[in-house]
Amino acid sequence: MSVLIVGSTALDSIKTPRAENPRLLGGSASHAAVAASFFSPVNLVGIVGSDFPKKYVQLYRRHGIDLAGLQVAEGATFHWAGEYEVNMNNRRTLKTELGVFETFKPDLPPAYRKTPYVLLANIAPALQLHVLDQVVKPKFVIADTMDLWLNIALEDLLRLLRRIDALVLNDSEARQLTLEDNVITAARKIHRLGPKYVIVKKGEHGSILSGPHGLFLCPAYPLEKVVDPTGAGDSFVGGLIGHLAAARGSIDANLRQAMLYGSVTASFCCAGFGLSATTKTTRAKIEQRVAALRKIVAV
Amino acid sequence: MSVLIVGSTALDSIKTPRAENPRLLGGSASHAAVAASFFSPVNLVGIVGSDFPKKYVQLYRRHGIDLAGLQVAEGATFHWAGEYEVNMNNRRTLKTELGVFETFKPDLPPAYRKTPYVLLANIAPALQLHVLDQVVKPKFVIADTMDLWLNIALEDLLRLLRRIDALVLNDSEARQLTLEDNVITAARKIHRLGPKYVIVKKGEHGSILSGPHGLFLCPAYPLEKVVDPTGAGDSFVGGLIGHLAAARGSIDANLRQAMLYGSVTASFCCAGFGLSATTKTTRAKIEQRVAALRKIVAV
Image (cartoon, rainbow over all chains, first blue to last red; front, side, top):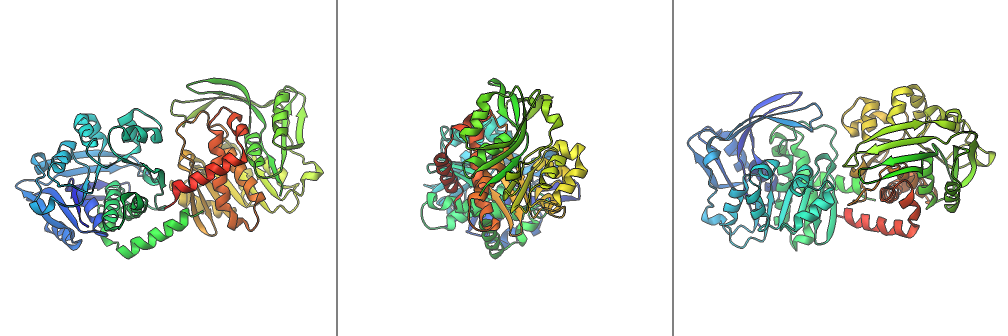
């Protein structure tokens, strides 16, 4: 089945201790859409400016991503610039130029409205809500968020939480949202805000699912070298929902496996700048790494 | 089969944001010995002072721990005092009074020399080497260490590494020892220093085994409440070697499972001050939690 993905479509300038790469294709929706595309057809909703390089449109197309929902507006594409510290765990934002994103209103093409799987990738919760208002009886809705929205749009976010099946957020965000230091307790508190499933991302330490059948600890694929972790979280949730949409059976029966696929897809993302490593991978390579990861955690 | 455990036998005064507990039974050998005792007979090697409370000797005995190697010397028992911060992840040492430990020479009773499984719990590497010099053809030797010895006894530690089968250390120590930020790469470098097996502890994020059959990611049992993590690492390695000594078959065939048992034993340790929660657990409760953990990680 198809996946609807809305989020940011951006140009990222990324600096690490080893290299600097200007204006790479980035944004939460770009990373998530390419990740999901290995498993399911993707309907993308986003906005880019008149400066958006054609090669990136071609990149989306090579991954079979439907672009009927990609708006092109007069002006500059959303541009983010950031810098990573030596250990690649901490990053700071050098620049955020919203450009055409400032006027983004994610109106869905009619053909998108019945997409059964919906990923509200990281953007303002008000925009995520606007998309939710347009979809018709989705089978599964998952939303990602970030600390910024906890700080400046908490009311919208809380409204969103009452309407989604699953929330994905990282451990520090879970702590911030619940004022609870223990992530298991934090996840339990988030259930009370709405979502049946709560997924807490812990970067290189994997992720935790809390749901009606208890906890699941999902491993991260162990990497010796991280080139650029930008978009790893988006790739994780993109791979997750892509795999879920392709699987038969209930969400409960498939979610753990979908997380494992999300985890592995994210590991490819970290191996290159921007989307360069993700776009070079294949379904076969993902399957290989999933099989390897299963062996690594087998007791 | 039996396990020989040498390390510190101490009195710990532990302060957390919620409570303060003076002069609890502690020390690397105490935690490891009680943890191992759920699985195998334990021969303890340590030293205590004339002030050592009888109730703690009884505690060892209740766990069937052989005390022929526990020296009692005139003077004060090793005393450590520490304080944990709110999130229980960071601690600072308030006091270290070596007492009789200053003159500790771990001479083994003749009956201990052929113990097949040897755990050199955290003490000075010179003392760990002294024990190794006395054991006769052990089947498996595992050593734990800490940052202090990396700082003040690195030469001894490097000499030790060439003579043991497995090293256990935490992630920051692995980074310090190898000057390598990535723990997988760090583990690989540690193999070159001697040990066939390297186990990197990551606290609540579990542990990583690197060995001849590749990597194993061992989960930590997810806890909502950590009362006192002191000794959790010692309980982990104690449970690990205790389980290993009780298992049939090769080390390679049993090590992953032994780590899982170590992980669960350590989770009980965290649920109370000092050894209070560990001593209250049972083999049946450990089995229950191991079964639960298997379900939590099953894909």
